[in-house]
Each structure stands twice: as structure tokens, then as C-alpha cells.
Length: 196
Image (tube, rainbow, N blue to C red):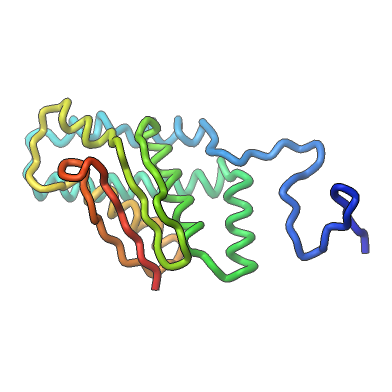
């Protein structure tokens, strides 16, 4: 058995080292992920395609677009652009048996970063029972306004909810999802996810 040392102290075998000497490891989203997802899932072009659609048609289109964004994000994030964060989240989930919120949160964050890189968002709470994600500035809302598309209600909710549902399906987390606040009324969209 080889004993590894860090800072002059032995590293217990059961711990995962977060570094490999001489090998750079990425801990952040690769810019290529953003470029690849944004090229295929262009928010501006998608919003323009909604002109003349009914409320129901728009809602269905939002849901399909949201699933597409998440499925593409997951494929790239776990394949071509797998980073050290993704590797570690998967290892920890395998070792502990705890998937939520970290696996789901990673996909949710990466899908927003990849499809709407200028959005402002925040994780307000993250426990093994509850995750709260706040969107403070949304490219979808902005593009709807700029295109002059007036849709009653909040059909874009279908985009986010379908995207998040695709992530939960991938992680196998049984989640109840709610949109508790919305940008038009509350100046923030706050999504709450409850596990179990």
C-alpha cells in the first residue's frame, strides 16, 4: 500500500484528492459548452419563432425548447465538456448515495449558463430536501418584450419547468417543483424544488 502525503501529513485512502500534480483540472463551465448550446438553442431566434402563435402553441413550444436545452446541456456536460466539478459530484453521489441537490443543481445551473449566459441567477437555498433557484434577470423575458410578443400568464414558465423536469429525470430525483415568485410581479422568478 502506497501512502500519499499532503502538507507533510498522510492522506487517508478513503478521501478523494481534488488535485493531480502537474495536470490542470477545470472546475468551471467550459466556454465551449456555452458556445455549443447557444448555437443550437438560440433564445432570440426561438422567441422570434413564436410570433403569431396562440397561447397554447407558445406554451408547447416553450416546453419543447426547455427539454431540448436541458438534454443538450446534459449530453455535453457529461461528455465532451465533463469538468472536475461534474466528476466530483458524481463520485460523492456514488459514495454517499445522496443525489439531491448537487446533481440536479449542476444541470440546472449549466443549462442557464449555456443557453442564457447573461442571465443573473442565484441559489438561495440548497439542502438534501429543498433547493431554491432565483432568476433575477432573464433573457427569455427580455427577448419577449423586445419582440413585442404579449402572452397572457407566464407561458415561458413551461420552458424552465420542462428543462428542470428533464434534469430530474436524468438524476432520478423524485422532485416536486413550484414557481413561487415571478419576474413580472415579484422582480424575481423563484423556483422551489422539494425532494421526497
